[in-house]
Length: 366
Image (cartoon, rainbow, N blue to C red):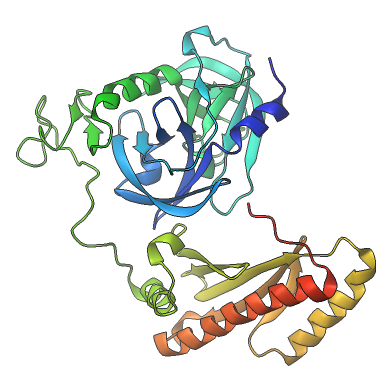
């Protein structure tokens, strides 16, 4: 057995962040199959998603395989070298075995929580699941469940809301079977039939939408003829970002959330339709390690806030943040372009100035 910290260190570069226009989740890379593994519900309805990891910047990834019954999906990995992790053996698991649930969803810190297997073969809807007491959250969906030998023994799949650390992972034997079924067809869009488990491919899809084995309706992860277009305020925000030269597909980080980079600053834009406000936070550098520089830095931030028009500098934990709040009814494309351009430019400029003048530290990417 190895330590929990060693397992986390071994896995951190193989954990993948996944985002669509409607949500976020986690995946992990299996070098043996050269695929990213995640849950089907994380990517459902999308043939292309955004991925990011510690070894590569945000990029688009093709969804190749979906499996509604087992809640699995396989994605195209990046071309960078990622660490090799291995599958364990479900048959060797016992109630009480220690496990680690690992995830890295967008918008959350990298997380790894330790617990034990409460029941190794909890049956739900005809499938066996590993019930665990390790604390997980919805954003961890698709992340690996790891034993203390550092092997993947399951895919974190769902939790029972309101339960006291009731988490469930799909055992590795289901995953292994799905990988072996798909391996001969790697690089082709496919969907495993939820009714009969037949692997449906473009060449055997009956009448364009039915499983050739049992006749159930199947939807392959095919790229749409027309791209997704949001409506209302979200559409206005995306039009503004597009006019400012940002890649909209890469900017999307879930429902009504976008993030872009301007120089060394990261700007996160969130729209909350319930309170009608658009909050834009530019994450700059970190507070300086030299305590003697903190007081003059605070003085400078306060002075800049007094002069600033519509922008506010603040500290969130160790991060220095430049923020802008807009009321949705006041947002037009023309005005928004100027407001966001000003925020982006000021964010990049402040980031450089604070590092050069006050010794602020480079922000650590999550």
